[in-house]
Length: 460
Image 1 (tube, rainbow, N blue to C red):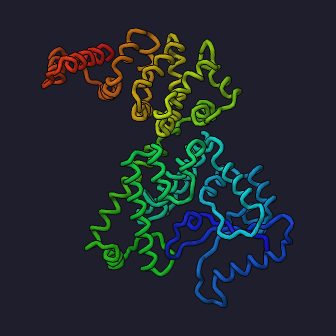
Image 2 (cartoon, rainbow, N blue to C red; image 1 turned 180 degrees about the vertical axis):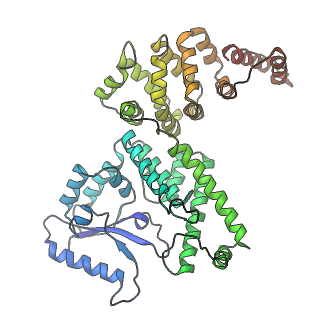
Image 3 (cartoon, rainbow, N blue to C red; image 1 turned 90 degrees about the vertical axis):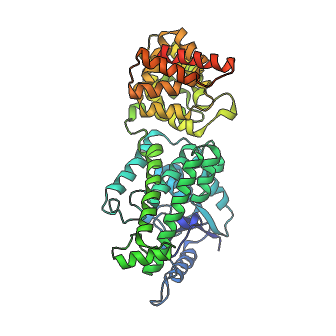
């Protein structure tokens, strides 16, 4: 029969473990009769679920099929395509990151899957969808299971935290970086590291934590002989679980769990939970022009027309260089990620400066001297008032702007000083100057340190 099976979830990502559910849907050619296809589909489901009370091979879940639970058991290719074009949204984008064909006797499934990939990745992941994803995660975390420290899957720092982080980054950057598309979490983490969306340290920590949590989950299910995502309450069972994982005692397992979950959670909060939260519909355009590879002209005009630029299109082309530097080697998904979260604050700061056009130009020129500005953007998102200080400097004084431009190394130090609000005295300045040039014998390096010291304290 000209029908196909598409795998989703862990099956789609090739990550099945003991007692996993399998998510799938059937699909058929438009000119194929529905009756025979449904007969075959039901037969496959009975086989997987076990005959006459025998032990099921797999629990199957078809709720994610086109049309959902109210749709046909075996929809046609046209029915599926129409759903993706008309009613599918953020949830379907998330679900189909992990879709792959596992059986195909149709002529046209590759065409459908190509459209699905385009639907998932070939458009920016905008503010509305980011906030929707954050909202779903908040619902999970406020549920009883989400607040249960024993929960491996949906609990704090658990498996779901990793899945949300990875799939969020895939949707955020997948339009530009094709290599990160795909349903396997392990592969995706390595590729997110390769393109710079995660630092090497972040990727290694999340990968290590995810592998460990999945191993604990697998051993727990073997111990329980059924699906279970919760650590055992019984001390003897917890000790047995620890020993099955190679630990000498329960304390060793608990310590490893706490450490790895804390690392996962810290990274999730930095890249997902703590960004974009203060923005509503009125900032959607500002976020869009950074996340979109080619934003619509009318959006550019609407956004940049609000911020007192003499030529809004020219201002857009200038500030776009922050998201897509002219040198490809300097383009950083991580920098664009933090810039998108910062951009509404940055534009507002530019608008309030005495000369918005000069402030924008000098900000871009100064940032471009940094080479890798992701850390700078991250610092500004964490302290938005610091962004206002820099923009004020750039908008009020060309001299100060050029001073910073010639000494970009002091930017991080200025951010740090603004955070700690240290007041300098004559004695502290003298001690700091002596410390900064101590042990420097080379004249050029000695002069560079002196000039940086002067620039730092002139601005600060």
